[in-house]
Every structure is written in structure tokens, then in C-alpha cells.
Length: 172
Image (tube, rainbow, N blue to C red; front, side, top):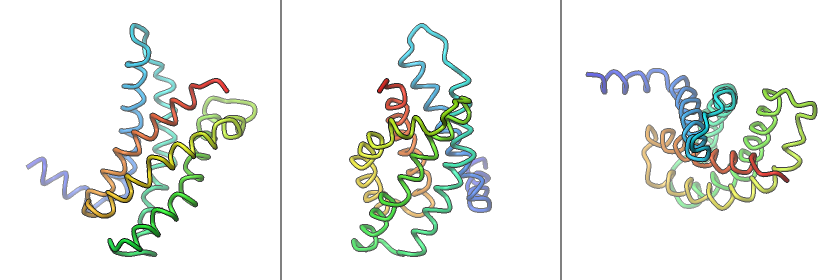
């Protein structure tokens, strides 16, 4: 009963489910990562709230609209279409997502220079993402059905956010 209700909700409200999924996974992943890294210390719940807010306000919405646009522009699972989607996403979508994350976090942390983290950490984060996302996207577009694709990308996005968080913690 609950499974049918959940599936119906996802089909009826895919945008809302995607945004909530991104926000939930980002927040849960940030909390889990803090618990793992800060053994014996309490988690920084304000940091987790900021990560969740950036995911809810931007990343969930952006990924939903962006991935649908890519699917409409380059439909299908043919190798040429998949390669085109991956290239477009890595050259256009990924820089926007990375910049939005660092800028959004800086705004929420009330930093004076909201672009300082972007200048310090963008290229390292982007290059690391280039080693991760093309493989995830290739497998996702070829092997996952459309309803599972957003769930898979959300889950993998959480893994990528761990990389971003690790980069964010680095002192450059």
C-alpha cells in the first residue's frame, strides 16, 4: 500500500519529489560525513542546514530542469546521444552546479566575499567531478529506466557532494 502510494506520488509530483530527494540526501550525507569525520564531537547542524538549503533551493530544481532539457534535446540511449548528454552536462551544467554550491554556501555563511571559495576551489572540484560524473552518467543513461534515473543521479550526486565538502574543508 505505502509503495503504491509513494510511486503514485513520484509520478504525480516528480519535480517536488526530486527537490525533496536532493535536499534529503545532501543533508543526510553531510550529517553522516560529519559523524564519521568528527568522531566524538557533535555534528555542526548549522552546516547541515546550509547544505540542505542549497540543495533544496538550487540543486534539486536545477538538476530536474537540466536533465529533462538534455533528454528532450538529445533523446534516446544511443551511444551518440549519451555522449552528447554527458558532454553537455560536463561542459555546461557542472560548472553552474559547482559555482552555485560554493556561492550559495558562502552567502549562507555570511562571508564578505561570496566568490572567494569559488576562486579557490572551483577548478579542483570541477576536475575531480570530471573523473567521476561522466562514468556515472554513461551508466545511468544506458542502464537506468527514466523513473530510476533521477533517483540514481540524486544518490550519486550525494557522493559528489561529499567530494565537494572534502574540497571545501581543505585550506588552500
